[in-house]
Amino acid sequence: MATSSPRPRASEEKAKPSVFWPLAAIVVPLVSLIARVEIIDGEKLPREGPYVLAPSHSTEFDPLIVALAVWRMGRAPRFMAKESLFKVPVLGWALRATGMVPVARSSSASAARQTIAASELLVEHGRGVIVYPEGTLTRDPDLWPMRGKTGAVRLALADGIPLIPMAHWGAQDILPRYGKLSLWPLRRHVQVIVGDPVDLSEWSGKQAQPAALVAGTDRLMNDIAQLLSQLRGKPAPEKRWNPAEHGQRETGRLEP
Image (cartoon, rainbow, N blue to C red; front, side):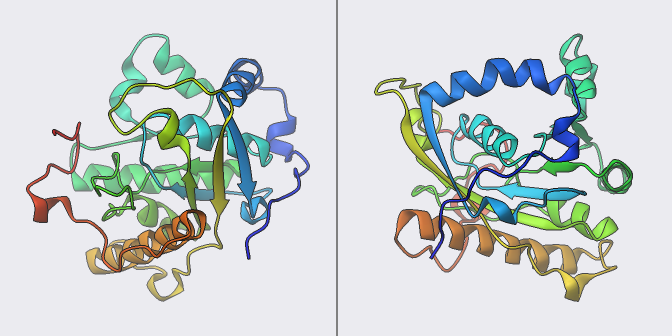
């Protein structure tokens, strides 16, 4: 049975002064006013060294929940971000200053090179990165994780980085998927649960093989679904939702 985790000591990464501290001084109290975040099994997030954290994604609000949880677990929350955002004045500077990782979408070859470079950078600096494996908000009508994209697994396999699944529940009551923000009542209960590293050993060294990436991603999404099942107290669907089978686009805003 999952249990709430004690607050861990800050990692060396978080202990060092950085641009994260003034941002945290604003974001942490604000998000904590809106949501009462309970972290379950937070000790499973590595306290030092690189990692790839793969959360579920059901509302535009959950990146703030994930960032707060990662900060409270002693690490600096760094996300994969579209490389085009790095070219935006001011925003691009902030992304670079906080060590966010650009992700290329122009071509598979470009994306592969970018993944290898990002992986090497994470290992070199001992940083973690947060990657939403679904790539967008889940299309599943009941908010279960849908079919994932292979980026998180590719990144983890490139340098043998631990791939950590995460799920959360409750943020959708604050901001429903493509809905309106609801701030009252304040401090709604949101649970975040961290899982054991995904076992990718059978695909080690096969990050260039599409079949290995798909199989590893299926395992990752199943692990995330099982974590969410623990929070919701109901079994997850055996099969992940596939937007293509339902005439839905896999990126962009979901049309009603």
